[in-house]
Length: 599
Image 1: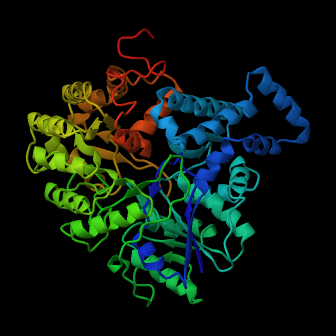
Image 2: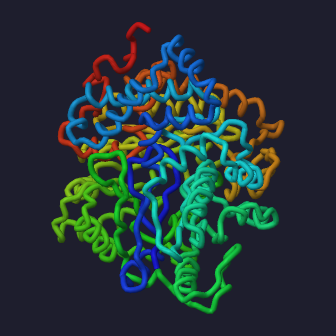
Image 3: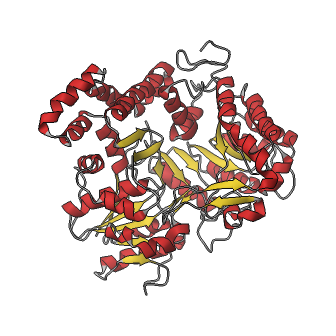
């Protein structure tokens, strides 16, 4: 039985995502299952950045209107053929190792993409294209599964045309299974559109919405409403109810389909007699579909256990592990064996997405990596209250670690307490000592922090930004993510908002894309004032560190996205001479408005 791991059209992908435990159960059974990965996302971007986009766009117009539209484009300086050629060359360049040692070349790739996407978005108002988010269809209610299904079933849209063109080389044998995995809300529509096309071409294919949880995104909180609506089942043959914790159910579903037994509707644990526990299987590295990177970068977990802290009031990510796996289940030897298998499969860059890895586990893991003499580079996530020593970070560097993401969130001990970030206050001086030890070990840092937490004072917020600015200004391989507080479904604050002096604004729809909130009167003034500072402080921080501002143009924004938020960051930080290690110390000519430079 053929199984397609289907990656719906989304943001411009530079990484390969690991697969759930079901894959480790099914992949070795080659006599029963033939598994392949298909990236509709890669193919959609190749289509958009090619002459094909122009063809599909014009095909939606009456024949007698096309010449007039072409003349209008020409009069407004739009040449989709020329810009598509440059954008296609830029995509090729992102896959070329030589681009990662030439700042001028790499910057020109961002410029080529920015120019074409600007042209694409100017000539049509159906879909907004941006490298850092999936294609977004204007006028569609993404909070309603019924509206999404209704739009996906239409054949007269640009999305359908592009999807059909992008999937021109997709094939699957009779009785095959397509497992779709979502990473965000907006991918649901592109997944639905792909399902419609696949069903037209390959009737009888079973299409399952198998996984739908990633980082802070999940459909789990909306599942009862989605079941009542039934709209998902107009597109998909089956929907696994839980986004994670369902690996055994996916395996049981595949077992039933292989044996010719019926599978349909919403699937929940306990539905089938088949009992499969893929968590007991030896983990198998995934094959890698094409991505826009010169080498595969694997985004994976070292452990099936969830966050060992899991108490932050604002967070909805600490439940990413598998239910029933204790947080103490980290096995350094087993993790290293899996990483060794990944390296043998061609993955030499690995980003470990475990929410937080403790110092003791990191030390053991590094020892296992060194014992196996693995030539790999990797990144991981740690907490600012971790027990550490300079020797630990030197050991991590020796074992290939090139970046640690720290979820600092705030420099204020008072706001730490509001967030329940730690058991007790962590002094800023101790955080700085921690960061400096990482820096001195030659390991890069990625600092995550937020502004606008309910009750945060403007001065506390400014102090956090100033700390990040002052620390990173002389840091090599230092980057950051500057978030604004959002009320996340599944978080403690969402489940009991009044306890945190906020009121949730519940939007209509059976799967809201986001929730607003209003601070209650006792903290409203300071919260609103703090939130009003976000845009200005974000610009100030970026400019002060040499990364330009929001008005530096789309090319600068694309380059920042690649370096700060994609697999390219790990590749660049792993280089002995990182061309973007610090724009203040090593300027990037002609790309950014440097601090103090004229506008």
